[in-house]
Image (tube, rainbow over all chains, first blue to last red; front, side, top):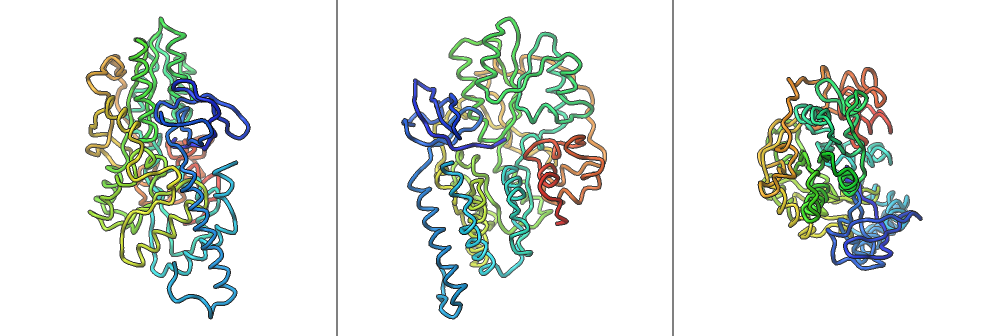
Length: 87
Length: 363
């Protein structure tokens, strides 16, 4: 029920936007995200954009996890070199 | 697709699993509040990938499942009002009330229509000006603002034949009810990503403050969920309960102010009855008196008759996290998605349906 999918905003007309998700274009309401701009990604729930994707935060999450992945591999390969405190 | 595929990276998932394994010493029981998380956890096999001593319990986060039989009966009775069109989301149509489903009502001649959005329900009302159109409103804070927006739009457009039966519910009071009951000992909670998109991560501060229980807000991709588990394990091991947010691409500390404002404009907070939890104070949303003409509960008087519970069904216990679906004697035998006895087997987000579909592990 709380499902929401990321979609790219193509055009905005008043409180309605046309978004693209997985190659399909759909009309959604942006009444709950009035500050949205074309080119933004939004999470769409039951025909309404409920949030605008924070691209910087998305990139930061992936960067942190990639860092973690690297540290993990190093530790696995060289357990004696593992840092005493993580993070 | 952007913002989906990169959050399913198997190498990063292995790294997060490795971190959880290394950091986690004590047995922990975590509850994923949201049925969407239960579904994702089973779909991606995360239960079997996590260390054995990290126990995941599903919670009450399936709006269809927590709808009480008395409310379902009321909705079904409403569908039988002559000339009325009842619109609702797909999951609701197959959920059994005391004796029947909305599907049964439809087969018996009631006009029940599935919609994907309240915008579709408004359209039904516009093209049927001589008929009453009711939207059966179920859902948590994610959905309630969209229903509030539809009511505000109906008012602005003078759409007098549209109304809503509001069965909307709020998630923090239900979480509190589960912890207060103390039936299941939880060391941490995976917070619902889209509910928290609306209410904001700060709305969960009461968990570490009042209960000493950490919460990690999570998105719905495997990496989001694993990161939340890793954060919870860290907070538990360090004895520092707090709020973490691994879904910051959608969730902010304060939430969506526009959505909160329209929700507050249209709805007021009332007690609500939950399957499995009983009446929870301050956990429901009723339409404010200013919008009374859009309140189907006020507009139509129906007699749903006496309420009955489903015999042997443990959906209520599953929703409180006291049992897992396979522990119900009906699970997979008398009760399957094709012939569901309780709502937890009907909804795509129901824990029983998810366990049935993606793996009937014995935990």
